[in-house]
Amino acid sequence: MRNIFVYISLSFSLISCNRSFIFYDVEGKQQKFTAEYLEQDHSIENKITPYRTQLEESMSELVVTASADLPKAKPSSPLGNLLADATKKMAATLLARNIDVGIMNYGGIRVPSISEGAVTLGNVYELMPFDNYLVVINLSGYQLTEVCHAIAAGGGWPVSGLKFKITNGLPYQIVINDTPLDFEQQYSVAISDYLANGGDHLDMLRGLPQINTNTLLRDAFLAYFRQIQDNGEALQLNNEMRISNE
Image 1: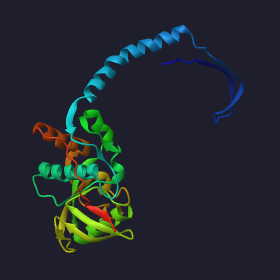
Image 2 (image 1 turned 60 degrees about the vertical axis):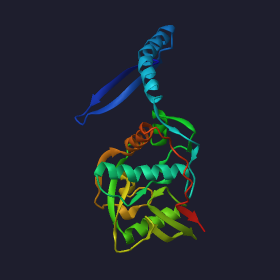
Image 3 (image 1 turned 180 degrees about the horizontal axis):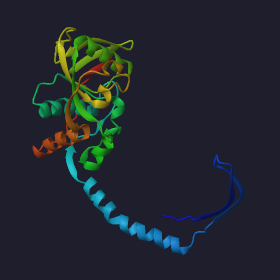
Image 4 (image 1 turned 90 degrees about the vertical axis):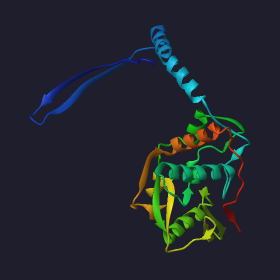
């Protein structure tokens, strides 16, 4: 770290009882950089290097293998399908209950694709750098329709257990697990706490009760990927158009 020393000499007088100050003179001087300070920089760098090396080794840990490139795109994509499925399945596992729908917002996926081959811990952190929690909310069919309207207006988001078509920016033929949506039925939806708190234009969800899995969404993805790896499998290409444009 470079060091800069600034010397300021001040002459002032205290007038009256209201503690006002009058500055008569200000003098500044900046210390020039010397080899001494550069030596201090090297010393700090030497202290940091072991931690940087340890972090790089940790981030290079193999988590899972991808069988093909998995791109992100609207209205549906292989990467979106994968992460929405992970959201839904891990919520069901963590809460030991059935989950009807999984939803990810498109902007929440921070990489354009997962490349074929090794997927490392560092890759997963790049994919999901935010410390958002995986939560579940219960929505009526009408409320879920409102969410679908927001998803359609955004051009399509990753979803699991949910399908619909976008026509003129509106959702049509909404299906939940191969059954037409029922306005009166209650549906359990796995989602990030960011979205459940009204983020990304989901204002209709703000204030609704949440069931928190106490698990970061990133950690849920890691657990899901590691299960696949432990089973001797790989991430597969899934081109299913769960949301489509007409």
